[in-house]
Each structure stands twice: as C-alpha cells, then as structure tokens.
Amino acid sequence: MTEETILLVDNNSVSLQELSDIVRSLGYDQVEEVDTANDAWRLMKLRRYSCVIAEMEMPEMSGLALLR
Image: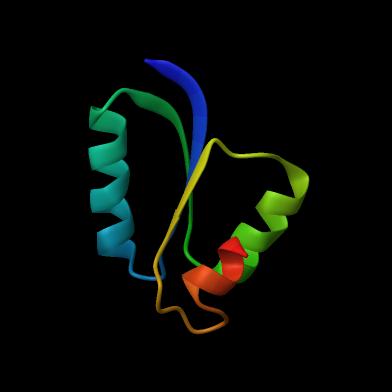
C-alpha cells in the first residue's frame, strides 16, 4: 500500500470503475474518481495529486487541456 493519491477522470462510468479496480489492485488505496473534467479541475485546485489519469476525449475539455 502506498500513501500517494491518484485522481482518475473519465466520463464513462464503466471505464472509470475498471481503471479504479486496476489502480487499487496495484496497491494504491487513495484513489479519487470523477466523471467530468470540470470536477477534476476543481479538485486539482484544492489539492496536489501524485498522479492524474484522464480520458483524452471528454465533453467539457480534453484530458490534455485539463493536465496543462
């Protein structure tokens, strides 16, 4: 188990759950999930994440735009 916090962003709930399961199976307990880039942006302004994994194609903004 690790103390690092990972943020997962995907507007597809099935993909988000599958990705979350994979990341947790690798020993990461602190995993946060959101289904919109706007929600992710709000969270990223409040705290720092060790890693952010985002879907590239989302309605509000792309994953690349979010990470910039």
